[in-house]
Image (cartoon, rainbow, N blue to C red):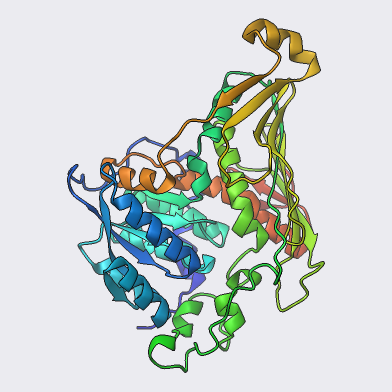
Length: 435
């Protein structure tokens, strides 16, 4: 089977969908079959690399819990060794072609953990085959692919959870309630960071030297299928094993890491929002190897509601910046150590000087701490929503709105210009729309 994808053909379903996307919102319920309370959800995994193996273990563990019974029925990967090892671990079937996995009637939902350039196509194909989808971040590689995913969710009424697991943590929901209660006044600025300092250079994961398209048995990689709709190239082990270093398959820091900041920020704000102006800056300052993506990057996005978000990152120094939201009358500290994926026990709301007296009169104190309570995990939420048809924590629309500033920051960096986004037209425009 020729699995090469014409990207323009794939995203054509998004053309004309802009108006519909602008009105699409959470309905609280998704269509699909109702699964009995004692029935196990049958899962398929597509992509058995490092992240895929982590999700496989998580799904198996979650499926053993009384409230989220599930099991893995099949795994799929273009690298023989990976799919064999994953199948042995899950005690399930191994499949080379994901289309074959989607044809199976005994699979209710799929977990997609492939390189980013396959996310959109596979998610749309899965939903059109009646499968619910756990779609690993950053949701998709491009905006048009994300629009196609949102439109397909609307058309098929499938459950789709974007896999940024930190969004199921309680601190975002506590911050959301504080903002809705007016504790910090008018929202002004949100900030976050994601910093690392890798010894070998970020994303320089181990390469299996024996593997490739000319290898036999366990070492065979179906390189043509792996490329999919990306530009045709001769097999390059660095691109296969370290795909996040290359624009064809990833947006680098922005798509890999900033999603863990912008997705929860959108939850905090109350209603996920589209930006109006975005800029991305940075460069390759230290890791001057084969990589194309920067090792240091900053995203700045402005929103028509009258606030902005600033996110900084470098892969060459691991000192973080606190994650917080500033209002005109107060500040919410959500991630004191700046590590957005760490467990946070409480958030703090502190009034500004101009509002301190009003805050004290209303709450009886000059600062408030809200304890973060245990919540179901991101995978538990997904499996439960597959059963109940409820809308998951990080649904397609919220995931799309988080992706827009990320994707635009990458485009801004690569083109060397500020970009403007028109929410109504759902596309980049030449200048900012006046309110």
